[in-house]
Length: 193
Ligand SMILES: [Zn+2]
Image (tube, rainbow, N blue to C red):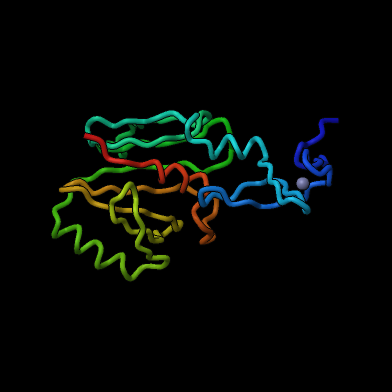
């Protein structure tokens, strides 16, 4: 039988104590790990360590809209060509290897400043409204509900381009926080010339 590393016991290399399972926070990402009760030496679960090591991630660069972001090696970018998605700035970050989400949908729409400000007035009243920063740009995070489901939306504007990033959550939206991996992908977003 295959034994999960997570269930195995690990000894501290310094003091030989059995390390305790811990949820560690590295660069604001929650990861699994073990901590020595004596010297507090911490070891990350290798799977999670790989996830937070963005230096091994691939870079997606969108020349048309002048932005880039990084995403894990087992994810990839799709530009859907379906009629209803025929929006020029649409890109999906997907992980088809797994039934598990998150995925990320990025939309770029043309919107005047007046329209955008009106939009912000409106979303201000919505659940989960929060001011955040995406790649040094002030942004807003909120929950929007349609007839079928609710979803998170992150929006920001650059000149007349309105960006909408939708972290797609697994099956039913239950108002939980945006998954850490999604936040990690978002933290790599930046505008390029
Ligand atoms: Zn120790």
